[in-house]
Image (cartoon, rainbow, N blue to C red; front, side):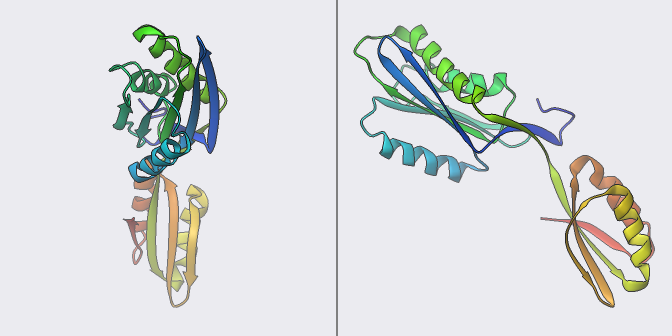
Length: 204
């Protein structure tokens, strides 16, 4: 579920850490803002190398503003005792574009499946509570082409709808590159394209 419809979401800014200890087993949690699977893979590999002496390096991630791309990895722990509790904390806080890695150092005393699941959950929760959570919007890029005499008409719409101007080129043939929240993009496109001689379209 996203907030305020489908064009906004919650994520974390940058990185944060958390730690939880249970019966001398230490659980170190690291939360990251991520934008794609390649970034997730690189971070997981980095932490597996960095904490090569740890018993387990487990993780979960969620990607996309619709929160449909996710994975939970137990990495040798009993099934469902590591990745799933980490993912559960991501879901509880309705976060996306986030990766949480939890590194476990075994303390010599077995925790049992419920103890393990609780420890991974608490470590992940700690990393989220220490994070800066942000609300972000899903934005659309719009390319606008028009002749110079139509400048005032175009800029009146831009001023009223207040998109971000990414780039502009004002010659005989003018162009604007705009960015606006997805929920407002249809209205902006409609208003611009209703000006005779103006072409406005979405671009990647």
